Length: 358
Ligand SMILES: NC(=O)C1=CN([C@@H]2O[C@H](COP(=O)(O)OP(=O)(O)OC[C@H]3O[C@@H](n4cnc5c(N)ncnc54)[C@H](O)[C@@H]3O)[C@@H](O)[C@H]2O)C=CC1
Ligand SMILES: O=C([O-])CC(=O)C(=O)O
Image (cartoon, rainbow, N blue to C red; front, side):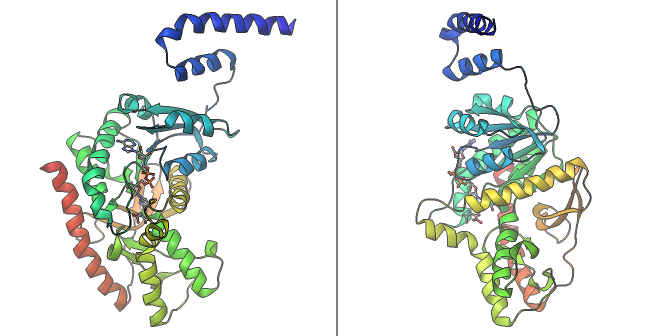
């Protein structure tokens, strides 16, 4: 009896798909087939998250990690290449989130529609000898297009911007949103978590501690001297020799370059970055859910210094950023680092703003 019913159902499906085959792509046909036999659509509660650049070096492991996040009910994977494969692969994981793939700019609107959180790792990475600013010419245009899409399809979503140079791409995103009349500064966050992740790891190595128990605030921006670890504010409280401070500061500031050189032309940090981005996205989702005391460092619109954007500790909540913490007492070494950081940051921020206003 059951066999007969299954056979009839398959006959019905093949009649439908045979009729539609000339008009649908292979991917749409497979979706239709699955839709006909699946009773549960899943994804009834939780947050909707889109990853733009999901097929890339960061995008793929980040897709995997977000599929594992129990706060995510719907996961949209968008890229200009290879999303059918990544989506098929990730969608087989038996975790709660429903995964859908979107390919090419004509599908950007559908990818973004109704999203609560949009994570952007789209863009080219560095090769040895390049600075992050050398990526500006290509990545600025990519970020502009994606942010225009966000303004149209999910203007109230939280945006986590990973694409480099972060010190310029966040101001670019802000200018695009302003131009579209949709700027919500509390919802635009540049992802600098990898600097904190690295700082925690390197400091733990020096102190002989478990890196999960160390917390180093890293402020300023996300390139070279703009990355300013506040070693005087490490938790648990500790002290360093002058030699340790200069070793740690330099290693944290050059962490990205260390990976770029080790990869020798095959890109920049992807796995540690996906880990950091997933950690930051999870904090944003816990904030949206209303959890208390969710605090992370991020590059945001700010009045902490005279610059319009600055990375510092922020409290995340239902509206995005709920509080931006002041820098607190700095050591002499950190005060001088802050002056260098601000000089470079001012130029990178201005470059981003001018790219849209020109
Ligand atoms: N904020 C941070 O701490 C970090 C930032 N990054 C930056 O993240 C970016 C991505 O790095 P990877 O994943 O290693 O590069 P990748 O080249 O492996 O991947 C980038 C992906 O973006 C896609 N893409 C290109 N144009 C697009 C568009 N218009 N719309 C949607 N997707 C598009 C590509 O097809 C590719 O799949 C780079 O700019 C890199 O510098 C990397 C590490 C750390
Ligand atoms: O260094 C790069 O180009 C990628 C990056 O931002 C990082 O690893 O911190």
